[in-house]
Image (cartoon, rainbow, N blue to C red; front, side):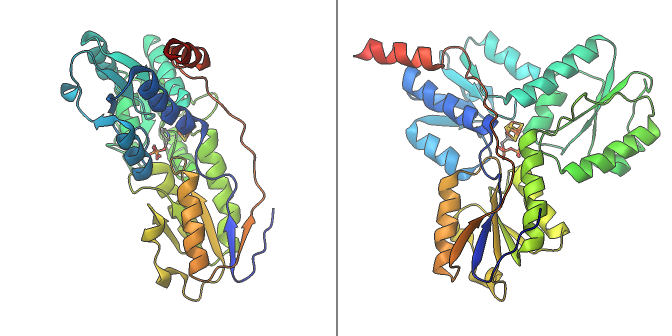
Length: 325
Ligand code: 2E4
Ligand code: SF4
């Protein structure tokens, strides 16, 4: 697929912005607020986006990292990134009303780890140290799961059962980096079991594919996303690797006029946690700085949707509305 851009064009990557897991996670907090009332406690930022978190705070969500900060009887939401088993157990033991906003595609990885672990498997997890999704997935087990961040780590990973070894990954990795690390894993551990379908999710894959089409067609790429957002960082990094200068902005105000100097064709995308309202604000700012037209790149249309948890579906909302009328 080729794309041509004229000076003054803003080229919009397709797809960009919210994925199905993010839509669902935000909806869970909003519906919990409606049905159960403020405050609703949320463990970790529901998604890694400053605007989304501030918006939900204004509606009555309280974001905490430690369950010790949640009072008895509270309603608690787990973030889209998932939680270690110990957090789930503690929340149940303390009797909170829990809604789990873990993306179903992250939960799928958790389920796979639990299942294979019962069959005696050890695991290599490819991911970024300290990221909540990595902590959640590794925290499904007490032992036997080892983190690998790059191909060099593979040489020293302390696997003791190379004949019963499986690999899992974070869902938001660079597709290309993950392939390189996986190749190193397979070289050292030829019997390693791979996921049936890779753990990097459809949304990560699609947004990276879109940047691969976008970046060569423009002079500069702007990624809307918060600094903590792994998938947004990967989009910026990918554009740079393709030879196009790229910058990430948390809001339109972050955009610097000097980034656009002598770069008349601008590519714009957004991480899976960045809302469209921010993309529109960036477009307005780009226009104020001299861009004249907005063009949509061709790209995959996403249709994935995930059901809401029990107690927050349309039936529950209708019952709640009826109880108040
Ligand atoms: C859960 C899994 O993982 P990342 O830092 O990219 O999360 P972010 O909150 O930016 O995006 C949503 C999300 C949540 C992605 N995958
Ligand atoms: Fe789920 Fe993928 Fe979205 Fe993460 S980026 S929330 S794994 S759909």
